[in-house]
Image (cartoon, rainbow, N blue to C red):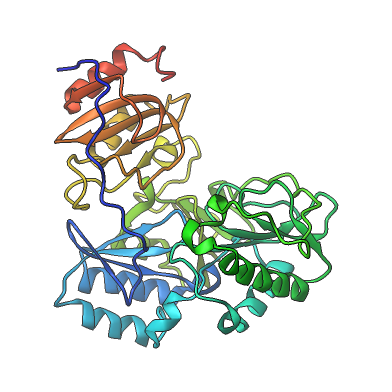
Length: 397
């Protein structure tokens, strides 16, 4: 049954921190344990070990987050100590739990050893002890290639290129950044800005984009970043193959098959639901279940895990997302988001069409976020499909 409504959905329980490995987060299917690959890369042996860990200590599912982390689901309180010992043994997490609380770095995945992105990351990792205590969700994007790739990815400070080609340190939410002449200078300025963020009351704001204080005079924002470049499309390259994860998740067995060849040297993670598999043999067959076509709607549709995986979700999302992807045959002209609750973890931006779970049913929101005002409520899965198929033109499907 559908009807018009303006009543708000129940408020979500927002946690002010992100899960880690040493600090897992309880969810509907057990503990969420998140692994942060150093410099955004795992060796083949580490990837195989992560697959083994997912199957031995969790549900066997591995998810790729929108901040380029890998997380295991379904870990129990009883299995977590064994999991941590296994992850430490395979150098997938730090031995010291405090290291996990350091500022997370997100690297553009096309970095090469010795280039500016790698050099900045290497220098910054060596200086992490010089940073102040920061809000748990803050992060830095290191994106110093010719054309920035991470502009749409959440980060509080960015090290990137200006239109003139110089290195730039830019505060998130500001159109311009401060030019610097070297990776070393970029790191020093970033450290100084992080201390300024704390000293100027940024802790209360929580994130740089929400911090109203003007930038200090010693960090004049004078240059705009270079025009963004395209992220890695799915397919074969000289270095290997880019593979997509349906809705950002895959069983460990599927990922194990993707790195089965001895020619594979490593796997780079991205914030775009795709893995870059170094050394994937040219001409090798597709990995069953993983995506190799940019037109596959499962790569573009935003869908959170939903029930029963998330304790805050009142509806299952992934089954409906899969059915919609099949029924719409990839003909989705606009953006689509399926959220198990109004929290909208999978996508914070407005989308052309959003389905939000509330009390076991779906709200339909057009041109808004998961917490937006619905045009119809009380939809079950069959109602959703019927409604969308009847209104394809109006909903840009």
